[in-house]
Length: 124
Image (cartoon, rainbow, N blue to C red):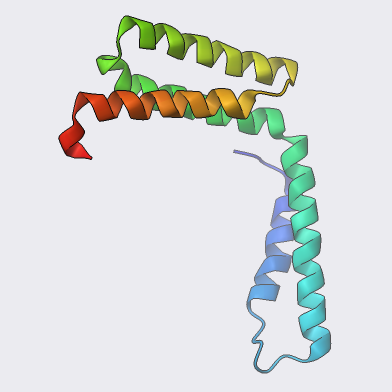
């Protein structure tokens, strides 16, 4: 979770834009609302970039927790080793601010799905 004081201000601007009735709004009001939305998108992107390490760590922690909750029980030793390698590679990408995090996270999710699929195909 990201705590940034700017988020409240962005939410307020977006809230006012969402309350605008397009059928009765004047052109100036509509233009101002569109500008507020565009500004909010830019500011959100900047906030995300500033907190990228925390966001990625949270994503990895959730993926690891999910994997350990169920798929790990049904994983083969090779799959367990591959999971650990993928987890370590994703953690390195976070720690060193290197590319490849998304690919490693995707591999963790794909491995979990494959294991779950194999464990009971009737569920799917």
